[in-house]
Image (cartoon, rainbow, N blue to C red; front, side, top):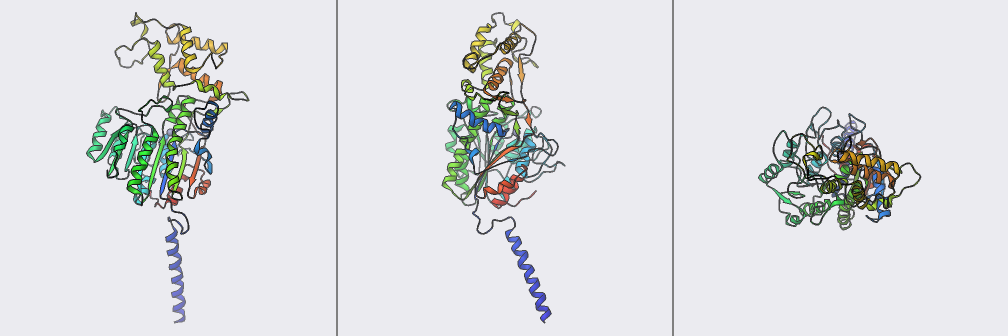
Length: 499
Ligand SMILES: [Zn+2]
């Protein structure tokens, strides 16, 4: 009997131990504050120097707030970004790492190195009963947002990515500029918008229409406007253009309206920071980071109303361009960037409109600006003085920005190549744009004169910043890899991690 009792109490003790372990596993400890609302902000291509460079730019030009909000969060650390296949990652593998907590090969979206689909944090949030929102300033089926709802072995598979979003039972609120399409598939963006409507998704075009988004709608898709692939650069934004923060305001209203009790998970991407980085265009990059921070201001206002219930995690997928602060001298002149009023892309359009002949009927394989001058007898090329004046007015060259003789000679040679007086490249191709070389060189020179030196137009393997505020933020100091981030968010928010 005595022996039986001892055996019984031992079993009882084991049962108590086991049950207490299973209670605490994956759940919030009793006295911990409960995180209901999770905001996960990703600056695409937003390197550490670009963030600090933005704050310096703002202070010296007055073109943005004195402080970049997240740079002053209580937790600031850094994480490695390498993929499973390369030290320098791409948006797809990095997005997958940030969404799933697993490293995969560069180019993969939501699949592991064996191309098997893996679960992501948006799915875990939904399984816990939370609402899910995804917003980006680029196409809604671009790599970063796709990593939170799609599972494909190649990031360029825009058709299956779009279909997986449309038929998703995870995403409640999706917002992006529009849809990218696959040439081989031959469907245009309106096909996917129509397909979404067929699935019961309410589709809205442009910020002016977002006031009509109702909490009763089961699923919502907000687009930047008709026929857009990306929102305009913040530096080029015109009255009436949709901004990332419009998506965020609408998304928070909608998600809170539906999931105030259950909570929600909201991923927000500043997608065009990367585009500016690929162009090596500092002023546009900094204004894009300011725009991302403005979207975060909307989040911070929500958090002020819900203290102790929110977690905000800000990071980047990788660095783009390899921006150095300092261009070989022991000083910077960031105030010089004040003279740049538009992006390199916009400046190229303006240059073409001002100086180039009107485009002939499109011929296959021919790029605008190549070999057209001879067929346009009424067109005469601009003088060097006219072109100099253009660069003076639009970038401050030869005005606030001194140009040395050697640089002027180089610019003059490019001018000759641009207008057919000399052999040479008249255009420069970056990942997302083909710009006039003279404009591109002038922007690069301005950046360097201001003390911002770009290494190249590609991604780097540098670590990126991780900035955290809200409930249990200090725990993020333990993160050293990008994959640590979603796993920790899930543990804090009480989502069950399932790969
Ligand atoms: Zn990226």
